Image 1: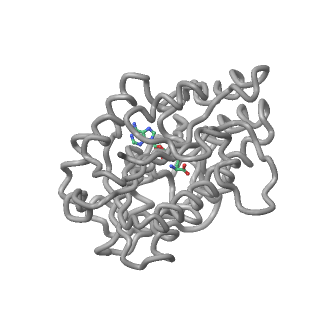
Image 2 (image 1 turned 135 degrees about the vertical axis):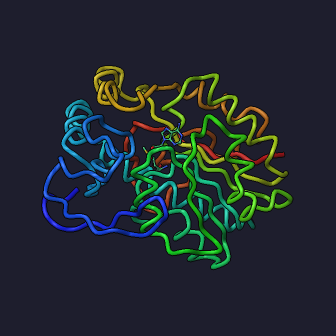
Length: 283
Ligand SMILES: C[S@@+](CC[C@H](N)C(=O)[O-])C[C@H]1O[C@@H](n2cnc3c(N)ncnc32)[C@H](O)[C@@H]1O
């Protein structure tokens, strides 16, 4: 958070309240600012203001091990933009974004609705601070909603009334799992993907990005140590392990590659090697 100033925070009934933000002690009610959270650490990398001292200290551990990690976070957001654009160009008009993160620039609904105003988006995150900010920023809308849920409980997300009211499971849907699967164990993410796969009609897209230490064997473990005391630890996976997450889907070209190399915009350079990305179609 900014050291001074006022932030709008949504209460449970979604009525924004003003709060002065004079320091880390004045956190929104119910928000633990002493334990770093993945959403707020990522916010530090992206140069956001919705983070606290504990998050900045954790982010610093990662940045010391990998000075280009903030760039990797920006590249991941750019991948989100390219992948959502690709989905809309493929005819998809509905999106479920698991592990949304704090609102920043180029959110899924902004990209999708800039191409088709009727595109619908369900945002899902389990961090209450994400929910507070998302509710405050998202105007009530018939096309965009946010729910607080854990992606390891996919049945709850799929059956949630907000999901059911926005998503037509007879039409293709894009399910985004960007920079989030590395916060859960193998069996949990396999079960989540399998449950979504069964609910996704043919032609749907699974869009994934995932952290790895493979590109930095010397410093990778030091970097992932940044999440050691966070609300969720970060687990690196290999390219092979990430490819296996697409079982039951048709992996699209160019396969699982470094995030900046997934269908890059013309003129883009090679970029960083901290995350893999892939997009696959439900047959
Ligand atoms: C690194 S951010 C990624 C944000 C966004 N998807 C992106 O790629 O730009 C990870 C987000 O996943 C959320 N998250 C982590 N574990 C989760 C879980 N088990 N269920 C739902 N969200 C989770 C965090 O709260 C955080 O907002």
